[in-house]
Amino acid sequence: MMRHKRHSLLIHLSVLCYCVLLLGANARSEEGAAAVPPPVKVRTAQVKTCDCLQQSQVVGTVEAAQHAAIAAKISGVILELPVMLGSRVNKDDLLVRLDAQEITAKVLQAKAQLAQARRNLAREEKLLRQHASTPETVKAMRDMLAIAEAGLRGAKSMLAYTVIKAPFAGVITEKIANVGDLATPGMVLLRLEDPDHLQVVTAIPETKSGDVRIGTHLAVTVPAAAASVSGSVSELSPAIDPHSRTMPVKIDLPGATTLKTGMFARITLPGKSVPAIMIPKQAIVPFGQLNKVFVVDKGKAWLRLVRTGKHQGDMVEILAGLDPGEQIVVSNNRLLVNGQPLILDQTTAAADK
Image (cartoon, rainbow, N blue to C red; front, side, top):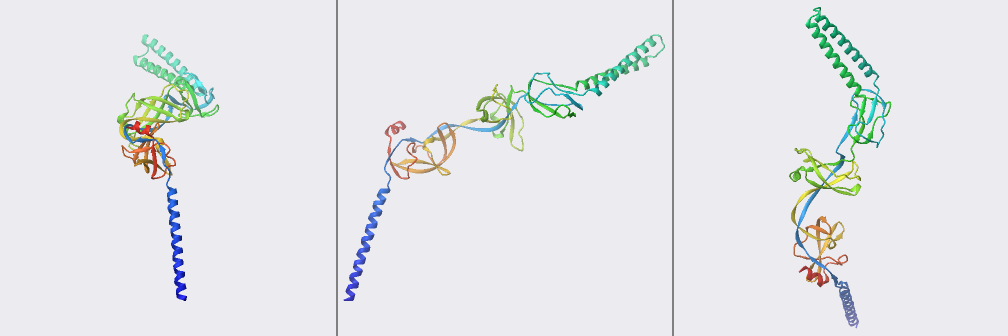
């Protein structure tokens, strides 16, 4: 009797477990059916290969085509400095005047020596006519006169060095010295630049050295001034720097008042057309640090990771991940999941054909 009861209990438990498993399987089946996403209407585009202009950029600095470091040639205390930072000067305007007392004294001494040499020569020439002197003495007096004249010219040149004038019209961009400072030979006192004639100084890679010549026009962009201009190559080094493997280049800029010296610039170098895969940028969906594109196959969207390259307008270069001829989704693709059914926009499909 006890055996029969135990056997009956085991049968009931087995039936109960089967029912539970059956209900769980049905629940999972219904849940799986509910997890299938509904079809989404999308527009598509065909992946094509086109000729893409491969360009490269280098960086440079805006500089004045004409600039000078104003320095002293002699020692002396600065007596006058009538300019300040940002002053605009014309050519031959006074920039610096140095103390000239010692040099003035040397000029007076040289004048006195010249006058004496002239008197001595005149006396000896008169004596020679009277046969009271010799030709050798007269020749020596003439040599002394030439030495005195050269001494006066040298003293006057030194006196001219006490007055420093602007070598060209421009703007004072740096003022280092002040009135009362002692100027020494070679000491930079001011810096002068011509802001009306600017250029970009850069260096291009040796691989691009054959594409640039004197007179070549290059696109120059200065982000700080929001300026994009076309410059002409005015100077080109004939040698490659062995350390950086670059070639120094100077590019003349047109008159642009918004540019200032020292600004950062980007220079676009000429490139060549090469075949490349370009797709609309709206087809690319950010995926963390990666990018993904949905490829259409048998009416469903399939996720494909891609590696992108350069951007040109609304198109993006694809370096890896897609092949020409494939169909990709270009709309309603932000929330797509892998394998989701699609409803293709027939107008887009017809246009692609």
